[in-house]
Length: 257
Length: 197
Image (spheres, rainbow over the protein chains, first blue to last red):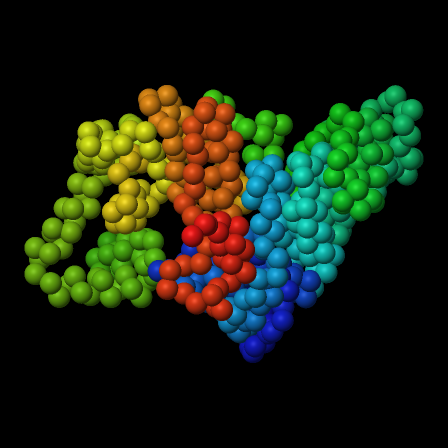
């Protein structure tokens, strides 16, 4: 639903986050755009053969669309132009899963009907990088993306220093540190008791992954540490489990011959 | 507590059907009211017996009145060719073409990272178990969308090492449409899968 005034909206560049069949032939699409954040629109007759929307409403596509915004009901899609289908993602289940995860995290953290240029830009970059990649990305890519998205949503404190005492994490620290999913912060062991234990070097690398461009994290791994702490922070915000997470495990091929 | 209005109850139940909103459900309910009682009785009876009398074919995982289903029991079908579809309804679409005389396998969905559906939630294990029975080709007829493509690729990676041929339904520009109006993805696919004349 939208709180925007009625009227036509044109040239809106969006990423298609997901789509859902509705009624006999319609489709409801969830979109992420810089101008409107997360939004929902209905594509009338999109499932009929020869529908004017064609393949443009596939999840993870970048599209330019025109819609009729309605004050108290769902916006109606008028036309859709496919800008980038990210077709190469479909060649690799690992990269596709990472892309779905990126869209779910960025789309989930984006506010509804509020400008979200940074989350939109992050998601767009993640899909472009994954589409062009030739192998599944390392752990630093996913954690870097989650850290950036949480930062853009204002939900993550700097990770290379204690959120309470401000002491910087140093690689030679032997005492454990804590990463808390509830607060989205790193704590020196002496300053907190709840959270997942990790090393100072993990936090330093995680902070580096947050700061460096996503494409530079593509092939990087991280020291052993809590792999899911940031995903849990996102889940706490969304109030539901991340759907793609089940497929992001260490075993890329759950069914073996 | 008072009983819910029977008409209202009927509309609520009918609107649970996929693709049926409350307005359509109300139309159905009023139509039923105008019919002789036998019409509603037959409809109700058919719905009641549906889940009790239908089962899953233990071979192809299709819904069927008997196990194995009539297609799996048909000796005239080609055992060497297995067509993999997402849903039971897809079998009807393939059969309607009159071009396929092989066997079927229903996956019961498609891999969808967007929805958290992985291979272990589909009937992939059952499919793999069938392949040792003389199959030479697996035709993957999943939908030409993100989920269908991912599923096809996943299956190809599992099945090709077994020495079987893995094929996919061709996709591109739909019959009867004009090239000028085809979307970018469809034209890209059509170019990729062009064939010799």
